[in-house]
Length: 157
Image (cartoon, one colour):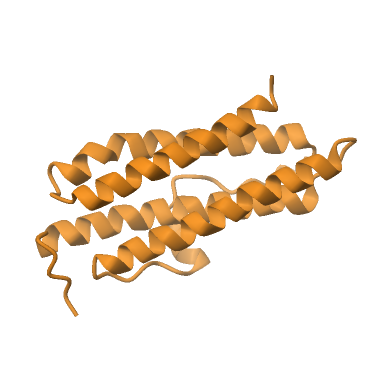
């Protein structure tokens, strides 16, 4: 059933497609953070294992929220690994290094990349696409990623 929420069908489709890319980014980052949690080694193993768990738990919630935002707009969320890999602008990481520092640098770069992408699109949602709700949602998501990136960055100081 079509969502009649004061936004044209064309704009809703464009917002949903944009959110699908964000969902893919979030899912890939979630997977990479899970990998860090499972595979980290080193003298600070326990602390980093728990830290990565906190981060992937946050990302798991974000994945669900982005998918539900797409559904609220009357579209279906992508939900396969194939779709996520086609939509994401992030890359899979399989360098084989399992130390905390390598994981932190990789995850931080991904958070920062997502932050830039979100920041570049906030005004487009509210302005050209007439979707202030998604603009507001993306602003909050951006702030969450800023906090997560800060936590990662703090480990590098």
